[in-house]
Length: 537
Image 1 (cartoon, rainbow, N blue to C red):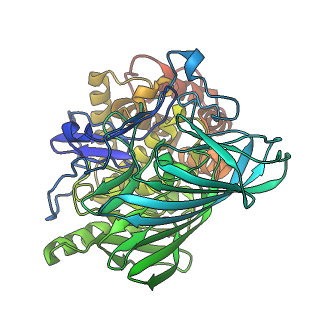
Image 2 (cartoon, rainbow, N blue to C red):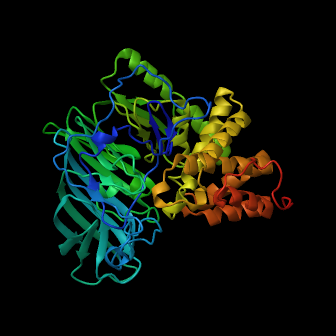
């Protein structure tokens, strides 16, 4: 994720692009989660560096997304590490053990597939949903928990049989008529409806996250907790699944989502688009986009579809400028494939909202952008997240530097490669800025620093550059590839990355990385010489 705002430097994560809503408007309608909580990527900070701009000025509409009109003013606040453990500790079965978000995710089962059917009224900003969760019990289950915030649940069925259910904070609590034994497959079908209420996440102080309805346009930006605003799930990266997302909208609108468009029908003036995500995906990356968009295909390979969606309301000049900005995608994919290995999914592209956002977001296979985040570096940042963040995902949100630091550094490598910038000069300026800002160590952040730009983006990026300088191109890119390949399609953590560093570069390289990750003070150099011991042969 990455955030940007007029007059400010790019903040939070280039992978989850964050919306440029005004602070006053953002307060109007929100969902606040109870005392245990969630997260997203992008903190905007004043720019004190002479690095090239990460955005490209395009002749596109300059309207900034203000807080959408919503039918409710209630708020859901997601608590992180709660102050009152006696009242905030999730009940057994609720929570996946995340150190930042005790209530996110659930235990006792693994989801294999989500089947979502959503009837969307973009003008009223309401949904009528039916989600079927296919899962396997990992222990004997007498109660099943799902993450769901707001919305009104009408019926719940387990294996086709209606069952009782209850709500507690952000949990939907399902009571099967019989215990489900460990190892057994089962389905839970949830019917629900209402206006999704976005979440105030303690890790994302700049905008409420989840389902956005803005002037008849719908989009989702969930990282890390917001997907629970529009469908019930095991809302944690440790439980990835495949998805079918079926979206019904007025006939004249486009409905886009993750993966491949496998079916589209029109019946009674309503269009239903069915999207299939056959690769594993964390729930926070699931996406719904509804509006008047044009689909544009780019040069694709047999194994990869590249398509973008742009606003249908653009003038011809705006349209050509937008397509020109997006035309870097095929070349950027080839560049990252040369560094990291094959692109991990069947399709990729960008959807551009018809207004300004304060962020961009790397939703799997179809990244979200506003009209002001179409610079080559931001596009590259969200693309790089498809490898680091989407295919390889952190097992605990405290390790977010493994998403944002990697995507940020890869976008700078792309900038140097494509635009001929001096990488060392750029990194020297970034080090100067990080030092002046007193950037916190990315390996020791709090939930409130989840998308702190100086720590999670800038200093994390410098951590990788210091390692790069220490070990050289061949070893550094071997480390990136080994780290990626060992966890592709799954999850990872800092310890696993350091194990790869030690195996390929030795204990001295690990000491260097740990100094950048954990020392309170920003290191004064970028690792020209080993801090303690030589690299092992």
